[in-house]
Image (tube, rainbow, N blue to C red):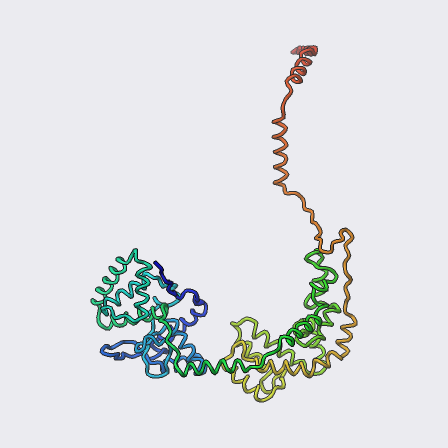
Length: 475
């Protein structure tokens, strides 16, 4: 008997960190005062309480998060696809429609963060109950899953049927509204975790896919000879700075146990090495990546009365990679110091970039200053970097730079031989060795003839003289 595998949807487990944020937003959406307004809506012949429209949901997300229509629609689609919200009129269509289509919030019991595994037995009970209710009128994909599960868990199929009948009988005792709402929630859960087979693409979607691939083919590509040539050029340029190819000066600290290499290449060492200073001249990114290089570049910019450019760039880096709980305070401080009219360290950027930056600061985030930071970076690269390499500051730094000499070890001809470290033995080992020595001494074989000869010699010795008696007179 061949049992085909049912894709249980567990290969792509959702990440719980971002789902916690989504769930916090869902709790706000259901708040009776500040959340989405929900009403009792009539679906077919049943009145469903706490229903909402897709348009209301989209509008609330845009107002709450201050995002665009496209971003709000994408977030709403994700909420539906992950099963937090389910449609009432078209259950199979797991997308958010921006019209009067009705939706409801899923019970927290079915949320992904509950980590309730979509078990085959539970799904079989659901299909059996639906089969009893509809008298065999299942969807095609449900019939296929039903038959596969019947073969897969045939050993407990009687239990599945018994549970399905019991749940069906219990459901009939509920109110019609509650029964319909529970059926919708259960159906929405299994539509997410046992997604039906996708339908063939429509003509519109097929044309869009063909257009996408045609545009991808038309994109300009780089020949392999050109890309490989660029890699060779890069390797030749940085060959002297590669510790594997050219070695470390004065020595590799991981091999020689000599920390002198780390001392010479500290972040803000007073006098850097010549190789480090020469690397600043390779490209602007190497200079900006090195803290000592930025310190020297800042000294040059101050003499040119443009030190605020590098200060602004470093402040943007701190905003981007620093403590995210203080983003709002940092953004306000940067605006007052560098961007506000009449600021103490005002930077010169074009009006378009300034407008984008000021609008973004209304809702600050870590990347809100990217446009202004890129503008200042390119300004320093094209205008100030070339003059810095020709300035006396860089030339003096290069002249004073240290050239460490290679450390030669006389004890070994192998440059990769590690110096053997000697350590004193452990006291526990010494104590064990002493006990073993005593045990060996006690267990050593005793020669009986030697013992008897010693006893005979002792018996032949003359007896010791008697002790002198002393008499005491009492007067």
